[in-house]
Every structure is written in structure tokens, then in C-alpha cells.
Amino acid sequence: MRDEGIAGLGQETSNRAGIAGVSAFVLMRFGLLTHVAALFCYFVLTTAPTTLSFDAWFADTGLFALALVAGDGVFGFWASLRPERGMA
Image (cartoon, rainbow, N blue to C red; front, side, top):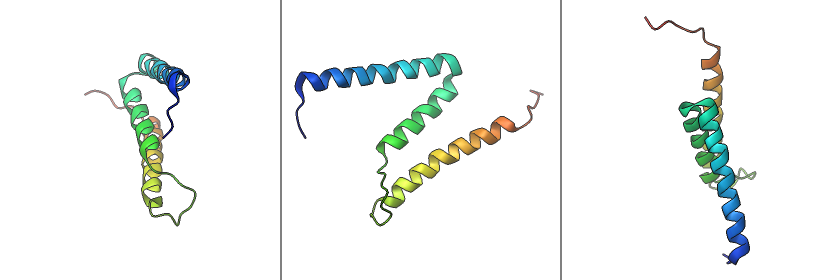
């Protein structure tokens, strides 16, 4: 790994500030549940090994992570279309 010094520090700081800004916007505008779902998708997609070569030994892990995020989106879509039920 290469040490990028001060230039790398500025880029890392701006990236973190951007992520914090988007995170605060999502939390304030859409609520806690959406924020938690966005963080879940972010962390799953950034930590999962993804590849276009399906012969790689880690391809199934990456596909599972993509399927998990896609399933979360499909469930959210399905839940938004259900008729609202009363609190009784």
C-alpha cells in the first residue's frame, strides 16, 4: 500500500464528509428505518468481494451480497404496495 501523505488525507476527509452529509440528509428527510437500510446496503456492497469472473472462488459471496441487497429492495417495493392496515 502506498502512503499518499497530505493529498490522500484531504481526499479521505472530503469523502468522509460527503458520506456524513448524505447520511444526515437521508436520516432527516426519510427517517431512521431508511437510514438503517441505506447503511446496510452501503456496508454490504463495500465489503463484499465482487467480480465479473464467475470462475473466481469468491464469486458466490459477491453474488450472495448482491442478491441480499436486491431482495431488500424487492421487499421494500412489495411492502410499499400493500394496502395500509389500521392500528386496531
